[in-house]
Length: 399
Ligand SMILES: Nc1nc2c(ncn2[C@@H]2O[C@H](COP(=O)(O)OP(=O)(O)O)[C@@H](O)[C@H]2O)c(=O)[nH]1
Ligand SMILES: [Mg+2]
Image (tube, rainbow, N blue to C red; front, side, top):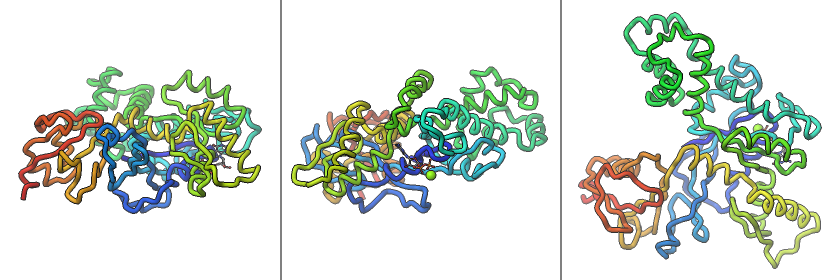
């Protein structure tokens, strides 16, 4: 699962990226390797089932602290977007290429209104974050439009060759992770199913792209720099207009994670408060900084960084968490690790899908699964529920 951070310049994308990937505990083994400097590992926060089962777990790829589990996902800091990116302005192509790979997007905005559309500083409260949201979305849509309209003669040929509209569009947008069912949905909604693409109007092409983008690249808005006084006005307006908006301050999250590492405070990413450790002496300046952070968290419920990641994973992508085990009484894997993994699976995933995710061989020899809570046998088509603890029984696993 990959989350892309997008937005214009100087809104705090890199700060958000640093804050979310700066882990408070050292993690030795990630389930993925990161090969690019702007690609990192962050975590979603969940309530672990270890508390319910009253066990002390030892996760292999995730982290569990006091019953809160942090499950790794990947995040990419996409190059800043400028108006005209779809025509190749700024780092336009690089931007779109990075964003293309993401399953969901976090649109970081400067909700304090202290940057213009190119990211140059303005007096706080004079910028227009609503306009920024609009232009970034539009760039994306126009980019899709340009992909569909590229080589229009070829569209005419395909139109005449007997391929249906859905197939042609799927071919055109193949690099974008668009499924046939998503295209179907949009074509139905716009009543374009039986209209040859070559006779679509400009408006119809644009509407198609806009609706497709909404399905394949769902967005949560990180209303960053919410710590600046001028942000309140904008926040209310943006929340009225968009569904997924999280007031956020990446800078405070970064400060807190540093304070944890320095041993100053008890805090887990996403907490609604933190405590200073009794035995450390802080300077007046440090105390003051922590007090400001504490006030923000009290008011907004958190710094917003963790919440934004969770919204992307669970609200936009509708992932569910499933814990596979090999020994259903001890809840362990072969090596004796208790509740070793927490997988983030798609809404529709079945017991057989889980087997395949663990190992292809396990999937091939799938016999049945066991719901560890009820000890009931489950068939291949059993649709997994959030927080299921599952043992897979497979012909190939018995060897
Ligand atoms: N007040 C405030 N400033 C922030 C916050 N996040 C980032 N900034 C500042 O905004 C500027 C741009 O940040 P950066 O992460 O480089 O933005 P990017 O160009 O979008 O990657 C820097 O001066 C940051 O210190 C925040 O949450 N609050
Ligand atoms: Mg940056």
